[in-house]
Image 1: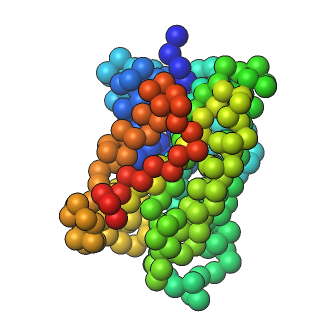
Image 2: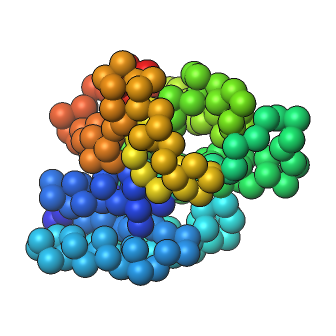
Length: 248
């Protein structure tokens, strides 16, 4: 029987690349999306065409009721998960803190932080040996911005990812004796569509010269790190913040 993995924000970018790679390595994958149903269905179809198992599950992780519904749907259609990747996240247009609004901050924290906490909580309730589970692995997608700060562009996004780093460390310690490993990857400059949503579609290419490796990363390169952390090969790895940043 295939282990079951839920990936939030899996219709594109790092989430989609992770879904495809995880399916290749034997996971049954729940592909979460907020609004891009065609993209999510496309990921599912690619997995199924290669002989894998996948479903698409709609939910805005920034709404607790939708998180609860998403987990109930995965329970019913696939079964109890043993893997979670918190990949859903948003950025906003480039702005200094002095020009940012409360509404922007609230959205940033609700989706990037509260959504990840809520999904991890529901995953623990299913994975923990204290709740009758058989253990599992949680991987949070943080960002190199958590240590770089995002100055002049998106300090709020960097702040949210700093919270994810702290959450990863705290939760890892909390559930280590309950069969659950919790880690984070911190991607650097990765060539995905998220930059366009922040108004800078060419950001990865324009800033590639700032990366010591002299290029932007690809979503598939981050997916390799995530899927390794999910796997039994990382059985003694927990509480790690793994940079996938080309040394930036």
